[in-house]
Image (cartoon, rainbow, N blue to C red; front, top):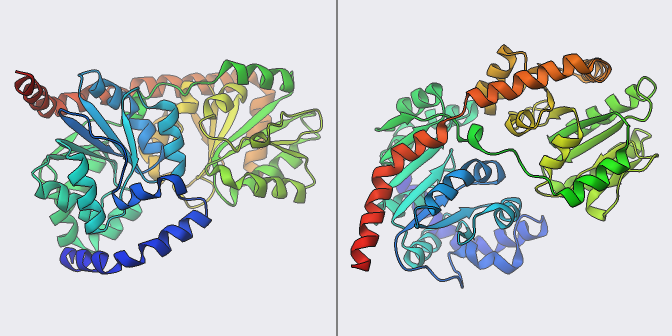
Length: 427
């Protein structure tokens, strides 16, 4: 099957411009950097050892920024690749000085070969579960050690790979190490054929709380004043309608209520304004430089990298991707910044985290708009109960840290080899 995939990918490469054009129209590529998706670049490779870290999108990249900082502190150059426009924005904002960011090449043999010939990484780290066959096969064919970091397998990914056991086993056999987030992930990777597995914990627990620009936070606080605030973070299609309906029902009970919605994909902001209008609500868009005023019901935070702002403004936050069948988004940042957490029933992507929060009574589940209305109303009316839940969530997240040090311990023999090689080159 891998041979068939490689042949098909090679044969389909001439059609790549059509794919790129389609993605450009949908805002999923940057025209100025499209050549990177073909493995081309104007950036120069630094002299000396280089670690290549691939993270699919925003969540994966955010989880490894502390790891990148620690590797960079060892005077090793780092190349980071991602596959989405939003992750490129995050890279520009948060990557340490000197770290190179590129878009990952399309998984076509010609593009991957061109990428590897230019960058010549000495160590490759793949984050979580973004496994591309040509990238894996060509990287290891060059004798570059390949390690899976913060490895996870969702239920859907596990079901999918079980249909192709020989294929996934052949890919996982190329990894020198599989550093799994949880014991359950480790068991799943072992079942699929990963030969060397270490459970290191979830790097997301060691990510610092997201920052908030004081010049932006102060005007927002001044605009909101004493109004009660509810937030919905990283929402997906279908969830904003529920949130808008909850706001509509709560208006009479909570005069002045402001609901802040931060969609997972910021380009959906104007559509959320339309949803609010259909519910008879006034909405404002942050991307247009608007601040909420006395008439604003729904404030749409359709900008990148500002969840830290939302979590500091809203004492109660619904974590999106959980009221619809997406699998849930990460609640850790909200917990670290003291928000009381609500979520829907679909949290398979972060099942262990939500289970720990539930056991500590640090998060509450809502199954529909009626339950959402009840939970928001109860917590906004009872600050002590809300603070108790927020404290439980924060303490739970703090207790689950330590994955960064365990990951670095597993990587240290490989990084030591790079440092020794660097010294030999200088000598």
